[in-house]
Image (cartoon, rainbow, N blue to C red):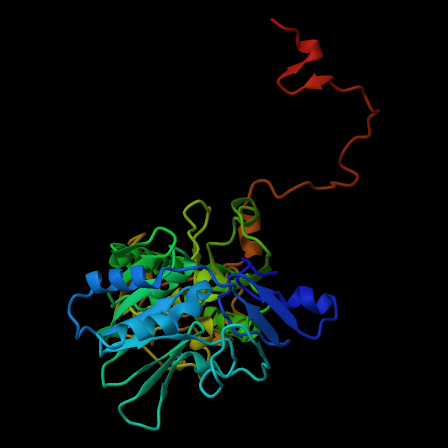
Length: 419
C-alpha cells in the first residue's frame, strides 16, 4: 500500500481485477507499471490577475529568467497566465503537467487516459532537442523547455499553490534556485525564506549516520511506483558491497511503534515516491533516509556536492544520476573518520568472497583502516540481549496448580486496600 494518497494504488485495483484506474485528487505523478491511469485533478479557482500582479512585484526586472511551476489542481490556469505575462517577460518558461509515461514524445495532458507501457528511467531526466539551443526537462510529471544555453540552476522558480510536499520536493531538487510562491487561497505572493542549506546539512548528518550503521532496514513504502523492485535489489547490492547487513520490511503506513520493534536495525532507508521520501524521522528511534542518501553513504564513487535526488529511478543503471560502484581493487588513500563517533571507518569495499566466509567471530585480513572487524546481523544482536522473549524451557519449569489471581485494575487491586 502506498504511504499517501498521492500515489496510484495499483495493488487495490488488481485485487478487483480492474482493467484501468481513475485517480481523483492530488497526485505525485509517479509512473506506474501495470495498469493505464486516468488522472482527474480537479480545478480549483484562481485569480489570474492577482497572481500576475504578485508575479510583477516579485520580479520587477522584465529580463529575469523564471520558470513557472504549479500544483496539479491549478494546472488548468497556466496557459491563461502565460498569455498575461509572456508579452512582458521574454525569458518566461511555463511548465506543463505531463501524465503520460513517455513524456518526451507524447502530448502533455491534464485530465486524460494514457496508455502506459515499458518504463524508461531516463524519461525523468533532461533531453536534448533537435535544436542545439533547446533543452527539454521532464521531472516529477512536469515538462518545460529551456530556449537558451542556461541550465535550470540559472533560473528562478515561481510556484503556484500552497505549502505542500510538492513544493518541498521542488525546492530540495532545485536547491540552487530562488523560489517564490503564490497562494491562490490567501491571494498572497512571497519570497520563500526556507533555509535550504540548513535542510541539506540535516540530510548530510543522516548520511553520516548511514555510514556508521551496520544493519540497514529497507522500508518498502510503495508497491505501485515503477522500478521499485529494481531499486530494492540495487540497494541490497550496494549495502552488501559496503559490508553492511540489510533486511526488507513492507509497511503500508510508518509509525514510531512499528519501527521500534526492530532495535537491531541501525538505520532505515525508505523507498517511496519523491514527495514522500523526505520523511521527518525526528520522532523515530532510528533515522529514516532516502535511497540517494544511502547511495552516498555506501558508494565511494559518489561524492556529496549538495545536489539532491528524490526520485529513486534516477539512481538505477541507465538513469541520469547513476554512479557505478568502484571495483573490488579500488583503494582509497583517504582515512574516513566518523563525524559522529570519532572512530575510524573502513575506506574500501570488502570482497564478497571474504564476506561469505567470515563468521560472526572471524577475523578479516587487516587493511589500512581497520585492524579487526566483525560482521553484524540481527542474530548476533539478539545473542547479546539479556531478554530474548518468552522461552518454553520444557522439562525445567515445575508444574503447579492454577490459583486465583488479583482482582481490580492495576492502579488499585482489591486486596491492596485504599490506605
